Length: 276
Image (tube, rainbow, N blue to C red; front, side, top):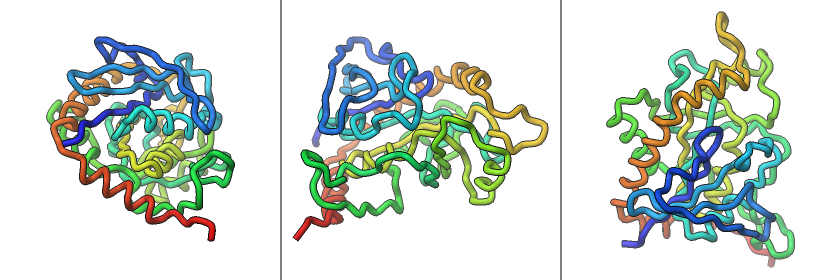
């Protein structure tokens, strides 16, 4: 049974190194540049983990400018087998209320400026062209653990959901918000793409804990999304998200992932086309 190591990418509010009893920081350089911040290594219980603040510790990097490739590469270099992330989202559906958790299973990509592959033809980068299947972008087994953990803790959780990822940094227009609802989007954010794609390219088992903070701007009678309201709801629930994370990490470590990790990596490699 191969040991697991959990990469944690903390979004707004869930990037606190106090997750670990003992921790150490390391500065990492990658072939794709520098990650958003230092990597904080420690343990949750007996499980080794690596924490990275997606937007930097001071939340100074806007979604478009996050170096997603460097972030994911750095976690892989540290030996992570899984990546669990937190993300604040707007709800696009009546039944997903502010404060609810959504364990994402699908995405709709509305970004426009982000590189989504490590195989870009640049010198020193991964070779070939990767045509990556994305029918199931999030790790089903890790998602189930997150859902079960939320249920055990008595938290309101939606066991699946389609996230619409927009470029940002602006929020949606009302017309856009209504279109995304017609597309059967469940929540909306600015960071899942290309993070989930890149994690899969490296064979990492990626899952996201999304927390609904608002109703975007589609819902009559509700105040439109604002930074103030997003942070207010997220901060009031960040303790719950942290508890879910801690308990889920312990459950992940109880399972033998060896064959599943190897199968995913082989599947990815089989879709790389090399020059000939």
